[in-house]
Image 1 (cartoon, rainbow, N blue to C red):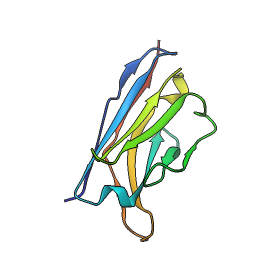
Image 2: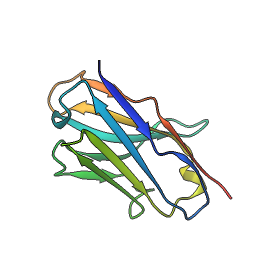
Image 3: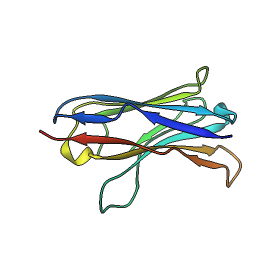
Length: 119
């Protein structure tokens, strides 16, 4: 079956760094746009960063530009989110999303990993 498994979350101090990983299985990874979302308590889920199926196009939320970097390794079926200069407002559950580049309705979600930025 399709699986997206996030890892790498944890507790860090403001200004620190984390690298999130998402391991994909059960589908043709290189046919999917991969996106990181996050959801903080009391807030709606928001897009953080997205990358096209072969990495040719990347977009970021304004709030993370210059601090976060999304990347993917299609040979390993992995997508990453390098998070630097973390702020308390980055605290959220981070989710990995896979969306087929052509076919509507082919969308998958991971279970999420908690990121907490606090001193």
